[in-house]
Image 1 (spheres, rainbow, N blue to C red):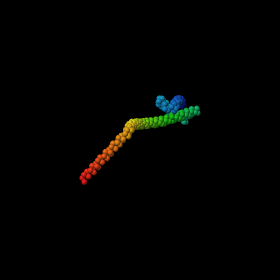
Image 2: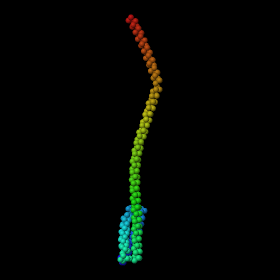
Image 3: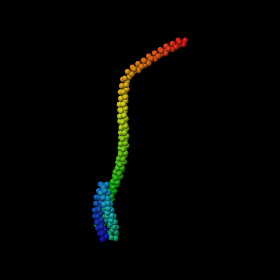
Image 4: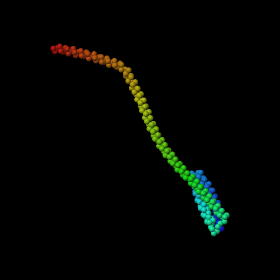
Length: 223
């Protein structure tokens, strides 16, 4: 039964190593689970992968030793004792517990990484949306600024037009004042014009009378 003793010692050594490695792996995996975003930034990605590879390798060796112990337990020519069978059964149970714990830890880590990737994708989408929204807002602000400039130009033209109207109003007011001055002197001019017209009528009457007398005298001379 030297083979059994050798396998038994190897199993115990592998179980001790695996337990230590699994504890360290679970601790690192817990860190990954709680802070998955810092996995690459913190430099723990390589340590985590290397440790996972070591744990897988130890578990595989432990499985091989347990398989060999199981074959010894099934040897009908040299059947093991009850204490050996209990030890073999115990090694098998320990292996199964370790395998379940490793699968559970890997599942937790993978779930955390999947959630981190999902959240990262969501954050990227949000960042892209924010960037697009910011670009849209900047473009809209440019349109608003352009509208403000156009409005300022229109208002400036309106103010200039109003100023021009004010200048024209002042000019028209001056013209009105001069016209009123002229109109204030019109009554005297009307009187002069009236006197000229009266004199013309008088002269016309005199000329007409003279012509009429001359005509009568001419007719009397002729006949």
